[in-house]
Image (cartoon, rainbow, N blue to C red; front, side):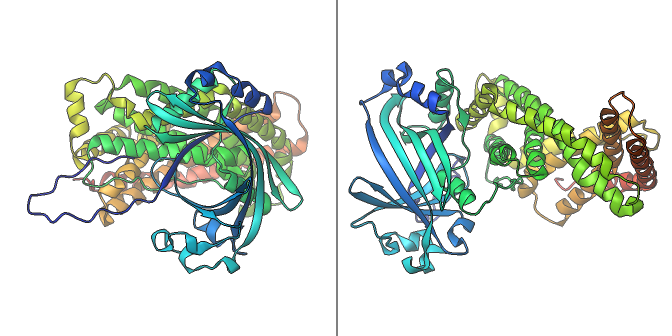
Length: 529
């Protein structure tokens, strides 16, 4: 995300500018072969095209060490042949915009891998210590590409229509996608042009590079769930930069978990995708008081809509992979709980099918592209009053302190009379604490230290303890679904009763220490003061 510059004093020695590596800024959109054909002849593209385009055959081989050293360090290395021309390309994933990667390209005289032609000192380790002899082919791509250059909204875009295959040994994957590469102009235009293409043909945001898909194919590896990383904000940032960094952070986690969920990589993928949406909604809620921007409203609505369909899938995942196994391991392994897992699996499959349908929906693609464009444009600034613009200009530390204090007060208010709170009120308190936890994590880089970590630890333990009662209530809803209002076998009835009794006992035991946890958190000194 772009940063506001910090003014230097007149007598400060100017620092030597750091050389920025060459960057590729690119948006990928998956398309069916029929959609690809429709787009090739679309009037939208012809209207903005500079040329008629050219078609090339691109054959590439990707290299790595036997232990995948490059891949493990976010690097991909290939030699691509187009006609008689060979090009060696190294790409490196980085922070900032999800569209951007560092990219170094050099021509090869005969197609033989030659690392010495790359600026190894600039690229650094681990490549700098490798020789070409330590690398071997991992997989290959065979692509038929039609390329055109477009002038659109003040930007120069190279649009490529790719169809072909990724090949690793005897295994292969089809490739059918559109690549939009920014040659000149603002990155937001790529998202905006992607939205325009959605009106022509059905498309889906492709979050995996060909390299990532190739490694997955070569090593039978499913894409892994992505946890949230710390937000990249500093004390030198203003509130506007902090908002951009926080929204960008939630967006990257959201994008990072789309492929793992689509590939059914496991329960953690659905969980982290849901977490990313909850973090986003929490961020929008805390910003609303400070920056009541109309542009943020539809983003929140679509995040809620997508999160809603993920709920059942997450609940069935937890029931099958955590609730039942934990109870069995706790001493009820002879209660025949396996019958519950068997009965739950069709419900789990149905919930996953609903998730996949929603992710493939054009509305979801529109949400993802619109959110990306909003971050790049800092769209929350649009239509704001002058006093609100002043809020955006204030230091991020002042902004975070005010937001944290307000969110903390709301949580304390929810917890008044904690010992006599009824279940619904405790549920509302748990949600308030979850929002406070996300808010704390957003701004933690501005308040590093033991006091902040102590506050977050106490908050997390309290939230987890309150969550036991919510987990038990969710389980009861799932057991009711398994019964389905019909007569059920005695084995399932017995197992359901055993789970209910076990969770009731757990909730009672956890409740004995809840008041103490609440008082400990209530007495914790806010670290932002």
